[in-house]
Image (cartoon, rainbow, N blue to C red; front, side, top):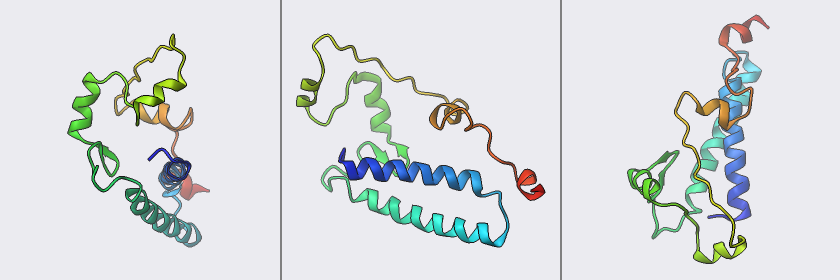
Length: 129
């Protein structure tokens, strides 16, 4: 799951989703065609990412974009999650693992996509251009 292809695919999928969110306010025909192509590409990529997971493993931690109940409970008790215990060999013995802060929904856009994430173009602004 942590292959280079998976990382690149997920990075592009997040970028494409961000583009769709920002550009959906443009209503001209040309923009709508581009948006339709992006939606099609996003749908195909979401289907492709499902094939990256082990069939026996299933949707134990995530269902599409949503973390499962099991993951939320596990996160309360697990300090470190790694694909293999041998991954710890990549860290110095004095390395400190710090817990990630789980942002609330109203905090997430500003943290997940940079300083301008809260500033999405409004429909009225796009139509005025």
